[in-house]
Image 1 (cartoon, rainbow, N blue to C red):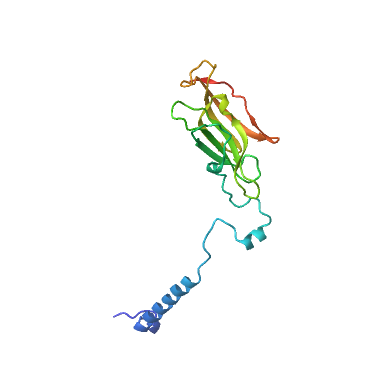
Image 2 (cartoon, helix red, strand yellow):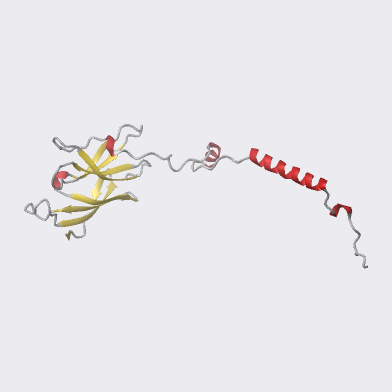
Length: 196
């Protein structure tokens, strides 16, 4: 029989007391980790961190104005005005979102013309109100697409080449965009109107 080169060490053999000590230490670590949890993760910055980082560059999230709370400048007679489409975004760069709404009278027949309106809310968060009309219903146009991105309002509008074209059958399509410039919404001139 050959003897090992290293003598047998007594602490390399496990005994029941070793298992009890290991289990007790592990239970202590688990218990301590459940007490010492980090704060819950949120998208908002904590006040201490914000103060250390300097001034805020963006305001807290503000909900866009709700078109359901607005009286639109439409004469609908016995029927109500209906918000057909809406899109929101910061159009004037003040950090507060505006809402663009496509609205028409809820006529029982035909295709009523749309109005396209910009809705905002005062700095104090007051009641939403219409601040601009991008498309007047008297223009006899219908908005089929609406989006707000990068400060631009984009819409696809159906219209008529002459007053003789029946209301059922718009024959002109324009892709239009508006941008806030010098205190007003400026529309680009469509490069060309497409026939439907």
